[in-house]
Length: 341
Image 1 (cartoon, rainbow, N blue to C red):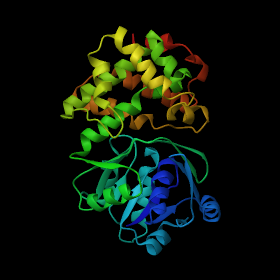
Image 2 (image 1 turned 120 degrees about the vertical axis):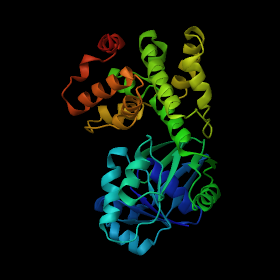
Image 3 (image 1 turned 45 degrees about the vertical axis):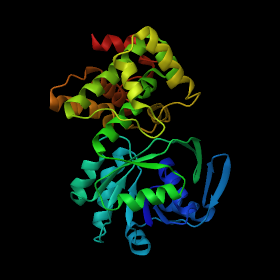
Image 4 (image 1 turned 135 degrees about the vertical axis):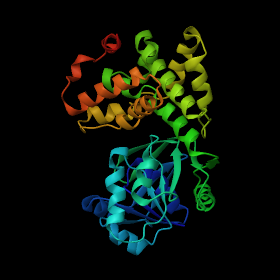
């Protein structure tokens, strides 16, 4: 297959680089300076204890040129959610035929955003559960191999999953996009916004009874919205989502808290969640509106109360915009609990 990846971020480089190493034609669009650097140095993948150099991928700073010269069967979007609309609109603005689009992004609304631009029936829904990091441009480290999920419903799903599995990415299909994407959202919510706001690692959040209350409330609100939508949690590749849901809703705190502290905190080590990295690097925005904010927005439409997810969204966006002092909540879960009273 021929693939065009919009952006060479961590997930895009991981999936695209693996496909290229597996013999598929892969192209990336990037800023001119980044495209030039990647064209010169190529990609380096650290997977399964082995290092692979990938020199066959191509890099373009022009979306129109990429469509013309790559003739992709599938466009892959693995960008931050706030970049989705402009990146997809840039495809349409070339006045070239736009192939079907696969989104591997976090969040539950990117499919609708993309379909609103390119039309219904042309979007494939996917999710990546393997943990990867990007220590530098063009270099990817697979920290924990889990796999990928792709929802059925499009003729390209079969050949896509075959290509992903040939590349060693361990893809499996799901009957519906909704349960798959909302189950991934549930995992993305754990310790993410709270870690950024309190400037605390995930293990410390779940070990503290005050911040543990917040974390469990976040998950329970998400599960309530899922039920209202008719979605049940599903286990994702290498990710026991149903067990997480059970621990959040039905297991007593005295049992669940130490289990979740070990499972979610110790497994992460010193690595901080994405919201923490984005906030404390001074990026100026995070994806919180597309994660916690999506829970709040869908809850409002469905009449499901989601005060904790709404509060975390508002606080983190204020911190990102610089209208709230970073020091106000640092290390103080009680300060967040007070906002809910």
